[in-house]
Length: 174
Image 1: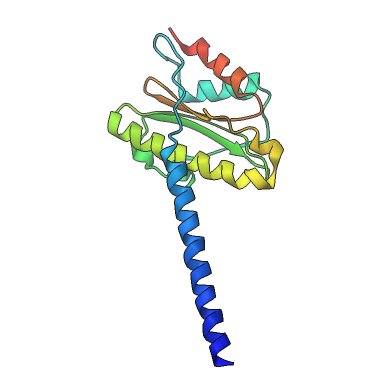
Image 2 (image 1 turned 60 degrees about the vertical axis):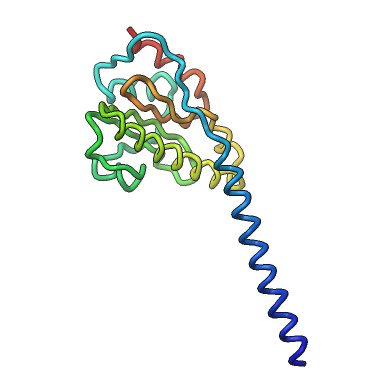
């Protein structure tokens, strides 16, 4: 009886080791695929304010049922310090199970902007993974370019028509 218990424990340990090794390999291969930031612009991106951009996107894309995020919410929701921001406007869905999100951040310092981009990319990646099995309709809202860079501005767009949203951003280029 004791012999079977030892074999069972060894098989269990081996299974756990293989499980963690497999997860580790998947994580490494996923990390080697770099997600590109959308940079399709010509000229300078010069909106009146971040709020003007988010209001325009919400209105033109008919996205409602969003809640405005306050400055205190930035570090918790996005994973970077609100001290980096020169201006911002961020909205997230009020409804559980809905992925819609529109945010615009102005960050003038290159190092801080890159830190924010990295945090936003990680946050969107994790959020999209959570919707992958949960809700395929919401998962489809996560395009390869949910985070885009426009000069000193970073735009996060998770919506049902991201191409239309990016076309709307063109009006802010001069």
